Length: 310
Image 1 (cartoon, rainbow, N blue to C red):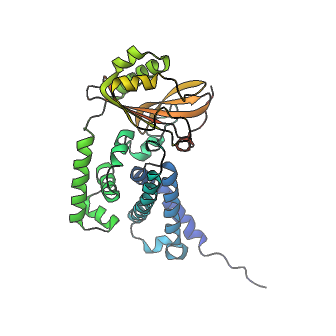
Image 2: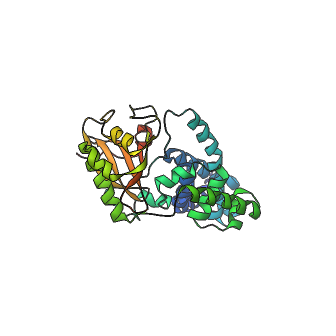
Image 3: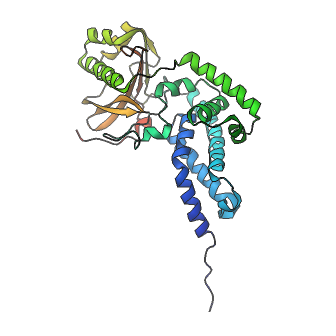
């Protein structure tokens, strides 16, 4: 009687799967902050999983002393390669490019929502991180967001600790020059968002002028897939107020829902039950005026948002 062989990789792969799942949220947060794209992050995690299970002929744990460090290293290096692909894509992107937002479910505690997966890095901060080099961004995310020491980052990106310190210094200087270390209180942000939405939805230019800072800038990212109000950033209170009250390219049945987006109180605009745009505000240090408006309306960047009952 011929004996049926038992696959030797089943148990190691089950164990490897468990280890990968245990670290998946950490990997998502690191990679998402490096790329600013949910879809690309999921692709990188898939590549990381394949690299993980391919090691050692299906038994990766046998040769890895620190699975967490190994997985982060693999994910970061896959993300650095993906960053080059994203940069080429952005060169031909129609209009302004904004990061893909992470939107928490209604009623979800921030500890349970997807915003935690990015360590609550704001959309405005992600925009600033776009101006860093890929290595500077990797070092900043690992060090400033996730608290990795320089020596450990050096091992992850295969650079000397001295080189990492230089990268970290340049990244911090760049970020601090463009992003003041100020975050509005959640209650202040929610009130400012609600006031802004009321004025914009009602077409009240006078109230909008009260809410907007004189040097406000509005970015609209529709990727050429919808009729955006503007393909370029709009600067100044008068121009932004006219843009917001023009009614061009908006949904036929607008419904606003308040959600946490990348950890901050923000608003999601629906056309009936379908997500149409995510709106995030950047406030002045006093918290009483809006200095930046980020509108993500590219349907590809909203594909992961669920429909909602009207």
